[in-house]
Length: 394
Ligand code: ADP
Ligand code: MG
Image (cartoon, rainbow, N blue to C red; front, side, top):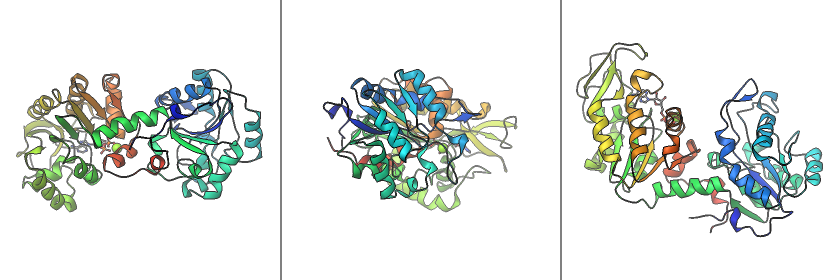
């Protein structure tokens, strides 16, 4: 279901807007090491600023344990936004309270107030209705704009609760883009539609596999999770990553999927889980005792790439091997290249897969690189995300 967006808000001049962004950026000694998430929400902030709205922008950062932690302050984000956005960007000492109220009162058209880390209050994750009401009252907001797709799978005060205390709730541009592309992958794909799934465990991706199986023309499996399937086919897997309690489920999925679900034909096996371990490339039905499979092999790479390149739609989640170690990164690199070269729509979702594509410098050749991580997987598994459900339908 498509959602209304900031474009559907008339006359924003002077309107007080509560924006939920995802500024959960990596920090080292108070410095932002990757500002991708800040940049991703700039189109929304820029639009609202130019329209003359008065913004209070909320986010979480990290996992504060008990109350405020100076190392998890959003101050560095406010400074970065001041540079990127221009105009007036102020930093509040908290996300609720009299000082926030005072700073909100002082906002002029086009001004931005960054609220302090919402998770400094335990009521945020509890989705405490009184806390949500205070977030809205102290910022004097009448409109909620949710641009934080990455936390939309959580019903928290700033992602869902606030929607009950404002007049209107709509999506920002990043949220809109995530829903459009991931919606394509989930509901209305062009064909041929190929999904590539890898990563560590089958158990993390069961819903996604079940949901995508009826929609795709081919589901290509790689990474650690392939071994639970290979075991289900009766193969010896050595010390490869197998989830014993999921072998039966894998057998059922294989039966249901038929030839649609494809497994690696060859793999790169190693004597230990180490970058410099002794290694060999072998057919999947061969593995020395006590060795482990850490990447897909060249035959599999070329077979998978041959299906990906001509596809009209490709969705990829989960690395094909232990890409963090160079000798086992070939499969992941080759998949990233195949997606980048494919003429159809290419979508990558999932924390490590996105990190892999970014590190390989191929992110700008992919149509949509989801900022969603866990949220994108829940969405693709068919779950309704609370931070999306609370927004107005288009
Ligand atoms: P994502 O975050 O993209 O959803 P996952 O978290 O499911 O992906 O999996 C990523 C991890 O899977 C990586 O750390 C990678 O090293 C690991 N992995 C991939 N292939 C294997 C394998 N054959 N054996 C063990 N771990 C693997
Ligand atoms: Mg991961």
